[in-house]
Amino acid sequence: MKQLLFVSLICLLTVSAFAQPSAKGVQQEFSTRTEQYYAAFGKLDPVAMREYFAPDPDLDFFDIAPMKFAGWAAYEKALQRILGKYETLTIKPNEDLKATRRGDIAWVTTTFHLDGKRKDNKPSVMDGRHTAIWENRAGKWLIVHEHWSLPTP
Image 1 (cartoon, rainbow, N blue to C red):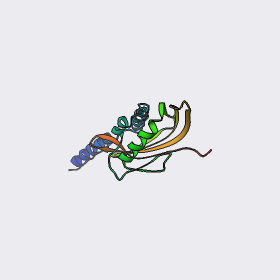
Image 2 (cartoon, rainbow, N blue to C red):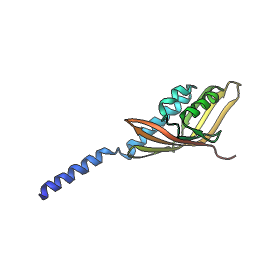
Image 3 (spheres, rainbow, N blue to C red):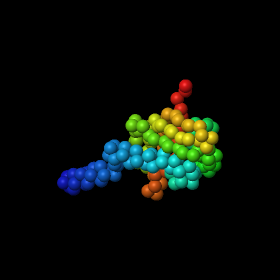
Image 4 (cartoon, helix red, strand yellow):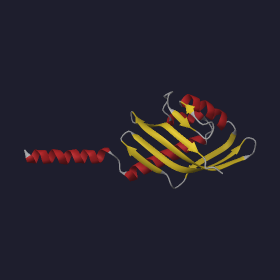
C-alpha cells in the first residue's frame, strides 16, 4: 500500500511539473508573442490586430488617449482612426520585458520604443510602458486587458 501511494505521488508530481512551462519558457513565449503583436501595429490595419484580442464587449483597454475603451469593437474603431494617420509605425519592446503565467492567465510588462512617420510627414517617436493581460481560451492566448502609458515630461 505504501509503495502504491509513493508511486502515485511521484506520478502526480511528474504530471504537475510538466503542466506548467518553465519561467524561461514563459518568458520566451510571451516575448515572441509581444513582438508579433507589436509588429501587427506596423501593418496599420486594426483587422490584423483582431486576432490578439478577446472580443468580449465588457473588457477594458487603457490607451494613451483617450483614457479607456470598453471592448475590442470600440478599440478597433479608434485604432482605425489613429493608425490611419501613419505612413509607417514600428513598436519594439525593450529588454526589460517580464512575463508571468499562472494557469490560463499570463501578464506581460515592458517598456517600449515607438518610431513612426505620420502622413503629414511629422515624425512620431516616443518611449512608454505597456502591460498586457493574456488569457488562454481554448488553446489560443488573447489579450483581455492592456494598459499603455507614457512618462510625464
